[in-house]
Image (cartoon, rainbow, N blue to C red):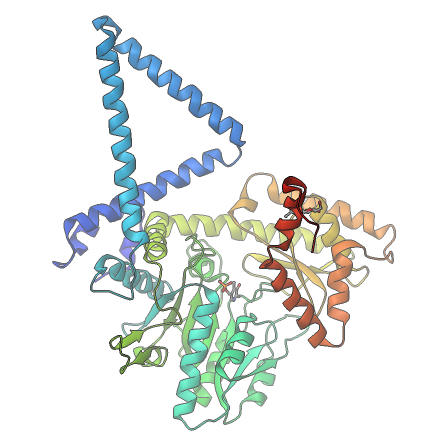
Length: 512
Ligand SMILES: *Cc1c(COP(=O)(O)O)cnc(C)c1O
Ligand SMILES: *[C@@H]1O[C@H](CO)[C@@H](O)[C@H](O)[C@H]1NC(C)=O
């Protein structure tokens, strides 16, 4: 049985061998091990090279190569035989080239694998099952807990909503409703839109920014298909009162989804990192599903997330089966048909590589940084921190000046902050990058300085992007905003820009 022991870094590779069932060949395991080392190597090299400019990397490569050739020449010199040196160099070259091709082979194997065909790719199937098992364990799932790997938080959320919609249909509900806090991620709007459900937004407590549980209770009707909480929510980084909502869920016999997409792989390690947090996971009886993004604080490459259920009966409602297709019986667990085996392998390898200690370490650094930023921003007069953020996001607003002016100012200082609406605010989402020495201090100093500058003239008009954010949320006709946004999406797919920019090169035509 796989369990959490395997989350203990590279040392844990040896017990892996015993994991191998007769079906998997030893070669498979060696490949998996090699992949881990490759990932580690890649990470090490990338982190070393992060601050270098391309010319420095190319230059260093050139000099190293020259150096290596010279050293080899020197070592073979006592034989004073030129052909010998040449021979040595050739062998050296062949060794490097074959290493390169072997590595590519391993990567390639996983890149072309597809869990839609578990019989052909047993290695990836096993990795996916283990990612799910480890995640279930982290969220205190019982023996019956289960889940699937998806392409991202949105797909995880879509799957939970689809499952609960079908459960509601089975109960005879015609128009299933999702009850979710207004702060919940827009993926729930998307789910409602795709699956013919109605999303009912429950207001927040103005002070704590947590969902108003009484309002949620009042909104429950016979059409309610599911309740939702966030752990934590994206805009202000606040944990919803999941214990109380869980009680509601139990009392009304409703499923409760906890959206831990953003901070799932932080909150599960917070207790061990020394930070207290109210229970948010399968320890609560009412929590029936959890979404958590491995591609956020799980540090896996983009395109992976997990959706977990407290019981297998819920997961069945997620599945799709077309038993009569001419192409054969088609059974798929989630939205995707073919799925990227390489991403799942990389996700698995990342979890193995990080290990429990790696995650706890990162969590400690990130939470302490976010706490420091929260404490220092709270000290600044004329700005406020929304509620009491306990995880990695700190949202800032102001009653005195337009907060988007601060976002403009901080952007010019090189900070990338998210802008939020209703109410106008900005937030910083702390990552490992912010935990580097001096970074948080610089951010705090920049906020203090820029607020001081703004407060010299608090009523001044906002310009630039800040003005656009402000305007966008004040347009009463939201369908207009939708249309403009659709135009924006069209632009992303347009090649016109490239054409017009090239025009001065090929000298043909003007911008369209
Ligand atoms: C990121 C996020 C999602 C959606 O995840 P994607 O990976 O962007 O699809 C859902 N909920 C929260 C709270 C998030 O932060
Ligand atoms: C295209 O050209 C315009 C004007 O010269 C410039 O402002 C814009 O940034 C360019 N876009 C790209 C994608 O290079």
